[in-house]
Length: 266
Picture (cartoon, rainbow, N blue to C red):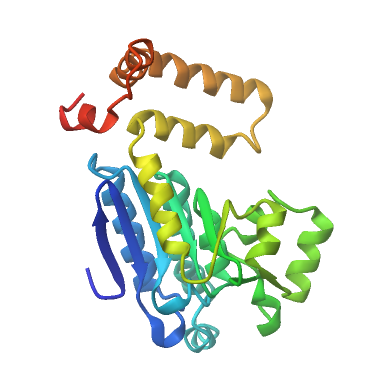
C-alpha cells in the first residue's frame, strides 16, 4: 500500500484517508485500485466493524485530475471506458461492502468526489463543506453514480439544474436535502464520523450487513421483492448467535456485548 491511501485502526473502526493534498485529493486510477482493495480486505476482516473515508489536509476530494483527463481524449474509446471502470468498481465496492462506510467531508467534494461521498452509507460533513456536480464546467458529464445518488434526494428538475449549472452546495444545504446525516463544525467532521462509526462497530456485525443490504435495495425494489428480502434476512438473523446475545441481554436487563461475541468466533 502506497502513501496515497493511509490506513489507521481505531478499535473496530478502519479509517481510510485519501492522501494527495497537493491536488486537493484529486482522483487517480491508483487511488481507485487501492481503496477498492482496502474495502475488499475490510469486508473479510471480522475485526473491522465500520469504515470511515476521508481526505487529507482539509479537502475530501476535488474530483478527477483534469491534467490526466485531458490526455484521455487521445485514447481509443474502449480504453477510455476501461479507465472509467476503475471508478465504477470502487463505487460498487462501497455499496456492496458488508461493513458500513461513513464519509467524513471537509472542504471540497466535487465531481466524482461527490459521487464517492454519496456512495458511502452515511455522510458527516462540515457546515462549510462544498459539494458540486462540476462536470458541466469543463464540458464533461457526471459519472460514478452522481445522478443516481442525487436522484434519491431531489426531484428530476432539481437534479437537472444541479448537473447543468454545476452549482455549489454547502454542507448545510445537503443536510437540508437529506443527503448529509450529521453536520459538524469545520475541522470536526472526522471526529464525529469516527464516533458514529464506533457506535455502529459495537453492534452486531452480521445484522449490520443485513441491514445495509436492505437499506441499499429499499429505494428501488418493488414492495413484494423487498418483503421477500426482509423475510430472508430476518429468518437468518433469528438463528444467529447475535440475536441470541441481543435478546438474552434484553431479557436479563444487561447491555449486549457483540464485540466479545466476535472475539469468541460466534
